[in-house]
Amino acid sequence: MTRTTSSRPRALTTAVAALGVALALTACDATDDARQAVSDAASNAQSQLDKARAAIDDLKGSVADARAKADEVRRQLADVAPDKREEAQAAVDEASAALADAKKALESSGEDASAEGKKALEDARARVEDAKKSLDDAAADAGGKAADGLSGLADQLEGVADDLRSASGS
Image (cartoon, rainbow, N blue to C red; front, top):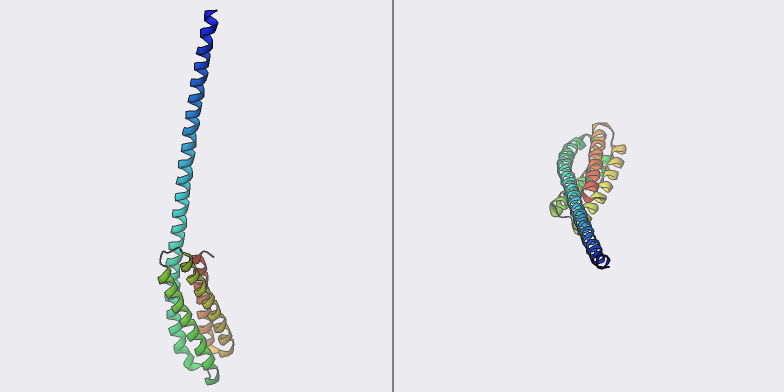
């Protein structure tokens, strides 16, 4: 009978030890899972940051290109009939102002992912889209090389609007 009694504590001790090992292994697995989740989240955040930086770099280039095109179109307006020139000039001025807003929004947002930076980029995008519509309207009335220039500038503003959309994440 002594054997039966002493085998019970051994079995109980063995069961408790096995349970302890199982719990330790489970805790290690949970810790590994948590570490992997944190690592995945950090990797995802870095990827999103890299995408935002690339979008901002694209935006810088497209704003600069569009500003140069606006200057070129401004010179072409001399060929437009005087009654159409005023509308075309107003559309180019609106485009230039929208591009200045986009540049300012870009500079103020920098690498700031705040709601304010995002809103500035979205507001600039809306203004650029409005300016594009004005350019399209002026191009329809202008004719000749000036119409081509106005349409080309409108196309570039569309690209700026797309880059603003990407940079703001909307």
